[in-house]
Picture 1 (cartoon, rainbow, N blue to C red):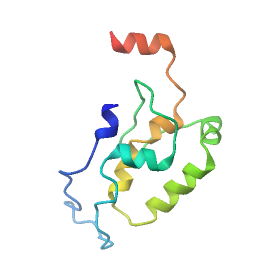
Picture 2 (tube, rainbow, N blue to C red; picture 1 turned 90 degrees about the vertical axis):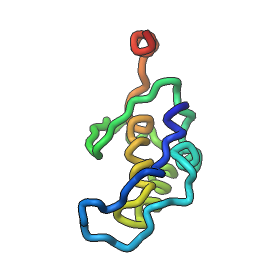
Picture 3 (cartoon, rainbow, N blue to C red; picture 1 turned 135 degrees about the vertical axis):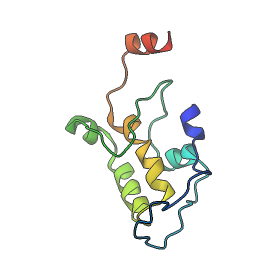
Picture 4 (cartoon, rainbow, N blue to C red; picture 1 turned 120 degrees about the vertical axis):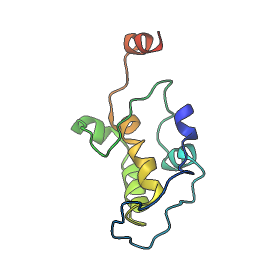
Length: 112
């Protein structure tokens, strides 16, 4: 559950001088765990797949398997601003939400 402890306390917003929308970066969530709990998604397994950089692929089946209330919460949360903490939390949530669960033999191999 190490992933749930992620927070952006050291993040330097807009150090590349992109157009700023004036919205404060920090969210109401203390860490990724509180954000993930807010979404109401299934509990995280022992190992999770992650994707960084905003690039990922997902099957239609896995998208449809995610409850629509989660998508609505993500959409509403991300509409707060352009470069916000919630965006970093969502980026770390794509893997658990959209990937097919690891098989037991995969978990065993990764934990060796």
